[in-house]
Image (tube, rainbow, N blue to C red):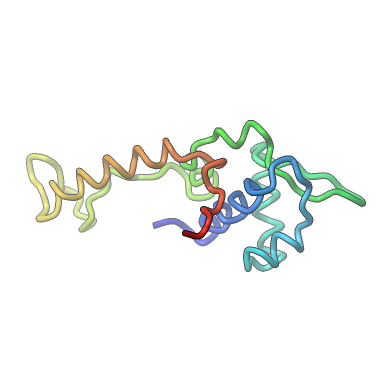
Length: 134
């Protein structure tokens, strides 16, 4: 559904969202998320360029979530890495699937797709914080 890079980006942002305003070193993020350090660096650099995270070099530095990014829909983050999301695609990947020529799952997928689209816009980066154990 999403590239590994996009999934890693969401994992990174969830980790940083749990530490609002704190500078976190890359090696701590890598250790906590299980993302290889060199891969993490590339993802964080892209997030920095899009002003989702801030970076600071030197002692006490690291990365932190930009305050405005907490209100960013996760769709925006996913599209940084995967381009525009095609949520209209047929679940069977048929080119001619539409209301006039539906695939066997068209009506079911339409309901799921509508909720999925709403979720991508409703869930924000700030909402990626880990849920407490029940």
